[in-house]
Structures are given as structure tokens and as C-alpha cells.
Image (cartoon, rainbow over all chains, first blue to last red; front, side, top):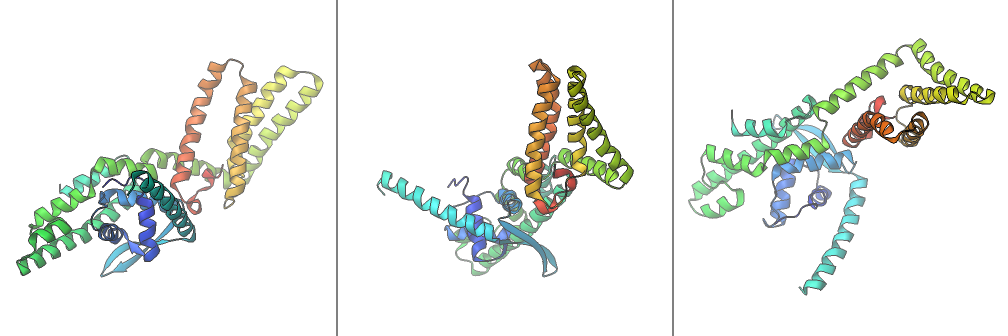
Length: 102
Length: 227
């Protein structure tokens, strides 16, 4: 399913639950949507960089099993943006549901 | 060249060396984890000898061989050209990195020479003071030229004196700079085509600097980005 424009929100939602790395974030989104929200994993990292540039997430490197991994965590600004996105989504999806009668 | 290397080559096209290293590192990390998960799922599915179709659907490899796992994991990354376009929107490109390095070099060169700083401060102040004096004496034509020169040199040299770690102040100064640029070209040229032609290189540089500001967190801004 095409969910263009919502990837940053889904990333913030995944990070609001736990600090995570890119691969885990991608898996979480796919698993939690039961495979409905499928996306090209190569586009996840540009979205993460954009969120980091905007101060929504912060990243840090740590070594796990001898491998360096970059972990991302949500910031306070990110939590506020997520709350705003949630409210907007509730409004929009509610309105569309009323129109479609579902 | 492996599939992943081909994908990375396309995805990092025109990115700066530093950005390309970052992309390669994060995508390789992702690739290794995805491949390990795919192989583990394939082994598990093979061991149980049941639920192959389910495993195939879930991890997109099923009982595939290593090569098949590699193919599917790279395919899951998507079109490398699309990724490249998205990366170029958020990471520094090679040309932006060059522009930033040149600007930083120039500012460092000036900042390390106090006599040069004093000279850079004196030139626009002298031009603006002389312009004010000429205006008072009635020589408007020459005063206008000196005023344009004074504003131009102020804009050129002000970046050296803008304090770092003051993003709010820098925003105000940048707005003042753009207003001064418009004013400068308004007083320097009468014909609009000439004004547009002269504004273009400045506008191009300003656009690039604004793009770079969006791509770097403020904490990483060099002094050249503050103005």
C-alpha cells in the first residue's frame, strides 16, 4: 500500500516505543501493519536523516556483537511532532471514513 | 561487482565523500542484518520442512540459496536511483561540500589574521562614511557608487564577524543581508535585465547555502553558514 508522506510519522511512532536501529524500525513498521505497509527499505535512511536534521531524532553509534550500529532515539521535539501528526491523522481519517461511509 | 555494490554505487552518485561513506555504512549494516534474518528464516523453514510458503512471504526469501537471499534483500532496498534522489535531498552533495569547504577556508584564513580583520572592517566603514559625506556635499552620483560599494563589501566581509552558536541572531542578520542585497542592486542598476543578470550568481550561492543549512543540524554549522 502506498503511504507516501507518512513514513516519518511511522518512524517517530516506532522510536517512541524504543530506541532502535534502521533495520529494526523497518521490521517494526512491517510487522505492526501485518505487512500492509510495505516500503522500499532504501528510503528509510534518507527519512531518518531528515528527521535528524530537523531535531526530531538523535543518533548514536554503539558496538553490538563486534559490529558498529547506529541507534536512533526520539527527541522531545519528535514526540511533540508525533502527537500533532496523530491528531491530524485522526481528523483526516475520521473525515474520510464519514465520506466513504466505512 | 556484487549487487549491493552496484546498488550503493548508484545510490551514492554525486554525494560528497563523507555522505557516501555514511550511506555505505548504514546500508551495509542494514543489508547484513536483513540477509542474516533471511538466511535464518530459510534454515528454520528448511529444518521444519513445513510452512515454506509462509516463511517466503514473511521474509521474502523462503528456502532460497544465499544468492537468492542476496538478490531479494537488495531488491527490498528498492530503486537505487530513487534512494539517491532522496539522499541528495538530505545529505551534502559533492558540489555543496566543495562550496562549504571553500567558504570555511576563506573565513578561517581571515579569522587567523587580526590585521586582515581590521582591514575588512575598515573598508566598508570608510566607503559608507565617505558616501554620507559626499551626499551631504551634494555629489549624489559618486555617493551612490560609494554607498553600493560599502554595502557590497559589508555583505562580503560580514560573515567573518557573525558570532557562532547564535542561530536566532544569524537568522536576523541573514534577513538583513537579503534586504541589503535587494537595496544594493536597486541603487546600483537602473535597468532590470542587468539587475537580474547580476543577482543570479548571488542568488545561486544563497540558494545553495540555504540548502546546506537545511541538510546540516545547527550544531554542525561552520561559521560560513551563519551569514
